[in-house]
Amino acid sequence: MPTIISVASGKGGVGKTSMAVNMSLRLQDAYGPTLLVDSDLLMANCHVLLNSQPSLDLIDVLEGRYDWPEAVHILDNGLSFLAGRTAPNFLVETNNDRLTNLLTVLKSDAHGFDYIVVDTPAGSGVGVLDTLSVSDHMLIVLLGQATSFVDAYALIKSAYLDRQLTSFAAIVNIAKSAKQADLIFNNFSRTVTSFLPVEISYKGHVTWMQDIVSSSIHGGTVSGVASKARIADKMDTILKSLLVMSPVFGTTDSIIPQAFSV
Ligand SMILES: Nc1ncnc2c1ncn2[C@@H]1O[C@H](COP(=O)(O)OP(=O)(O)OP(=O)(O)O)[C@@H](O)[C@H]1O
Ligand SMILES: [Mg+2]
Image 1: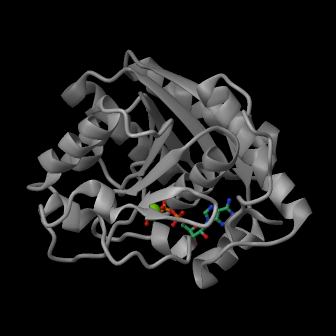
Image 2 (image 1 turned 180 degrees about the horizontal axis):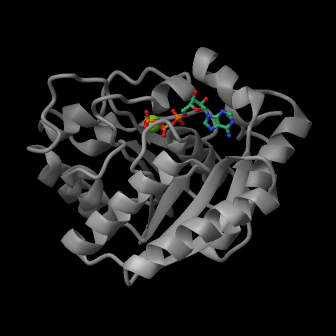
């Protein structure tokens, strides 16, 4: 049965897609067969970072035109990818049951995936909460900003009150250092847990990286052994803590979106 990791934040633009994409690539390379699902159906971005243009996507599946395996695109490193689409008229909320059903099918049936990573939209809409509800790990991306704290708190509060979810994981993105990330996390966690009976466990941080900025502009993957190794290290630190396991394969050959080279 695959492990589902959903990446959420409340606040927009904090790095969910960057984390989800790089984490998925690393999972596929070093941990086991992985499916990345872009569930941001208003502002889908994963395919941009992956420099991939699948002809079918999640909306084709949710609207019943295709079965999910037909819409899954296999990337160069073997990562399976179910793309989102920027669809201004797509009714996310009304199609949400279908997304939940799809994730439940993916979770319950043996499709050969060890991991499913879901990139969620900003906010705490029904779609995000439903996705969190079927996930094994709810990974909240934080920034050291008041707006990130307020929005992440609102998301966790909704997840607790609406879905009785109590166990969250968090990473700090664009931290200046490990020490600063620790402070940011501790501050956030202390505040949240003083108001809500939830647990938040810290899974690591990512610093500011020029190549994340570059990949947002150009898309695509990076080359360079040193960059690959550094990105693999970043993702491994987070994944080891989240999954409580080390890489199975240990290769750094094919991961590495431009997003994470330095
Ligand atoms: N560690 C980082 N270093 C530098 N830039 C970063 C980092 N993480 C994210 N960014 C930049 O921040 C911007 C937002 O990132 P991203 O699209 O991953 O966020 P998001 O949370 O998915 O946004 P949205 O809520 O719109 O889906 C992008 O321009 C990205 O390049
Ligand atoms: Mg995004």
